[in-house]
Image (cartoon, rainbow, N blue to C red; front, top):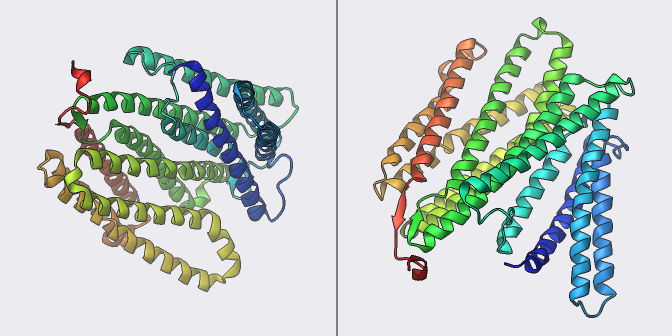
Length: 456
């Protein structure tokens, strides 16, 4: 594909991204206003304001160019392409600069219920995802300059780009600490380090994941055209590893935080305050994970629809249940971290206790209901006698034990034994899941080539 066609397609993608940025920043501003009960101050919402205003101005300029020219010729198209190309880089630089200013100047790193890095994390996560999805829709690749190279050269180029992201993160870190050393502003060293660290790690992981996605998609497409269809795309395994690692970190942190709160008299207030801030940072990183889980379900469906078309009906049932349970998990996360603080203000102590009893009961019922998914997956893959299908029964067993754990050892719910067993079962579930889907990505189904010329 020639450069002119690529630039034209990139302009379409970036136009969509600017629209998404306007919506994202506006939603972020409104949520912060809702949780703080006032319009966010300059420091509290600087990155949001900058992205909203800059993106809105770019779109207005585009509309002016579009409507003031009756005929959109090649010269006008190049002007539009240049506009989106330059503005895209400028807005990203402005967003990062605003984020640096917020870290330096904010005394409280939580705005309402939002950590200071929540917007910048969502900004890059959604940008990566939208860019990737629309690049596929436009039949080009995110890393189009590297994709046709051999595997070693491709990933060497990707790692160089990842190194650039690390250098940007280190630069932000040094700028922030320089202001502290010069006594320009007083900062919380631990919280700033973790805030910047989480942002950089998430952005790098997301970039590496999407880059691996593209390479897998490119190679699997070639194999499919040659008559070798992979049972389940390797992209599913890539995302499963990423989300599993994050889920384990989030789980272990919650276990530690729970232990600290039970033994609160043994810990200083400053330590507990830092844990609460870190917890908020992880919670809002967890919101980003739901976007990747949606993509996982889409990959799961489209891969198996292509490789096992004769099992489409049970596949649709499984995917529908996965979507429903994931949607419930998302609502539960929103409820616990955004809505619950308002319910506390409305209900008295006894009313709140009753409310939480109902919520916990519903959560437990849903948790038991979700056990049907590994059972249905066992039935689904057993129909074609795949060896890894039996592992779904082990996954069902570990998930069942985890659901029963509070009931089995209710009297020692706050004990070390409960926490140790919880960790063992969680890690076991992750390992079994990784083993299942690793095996699934090693299975190829031989079919008649879609493009026989590739074999010539």
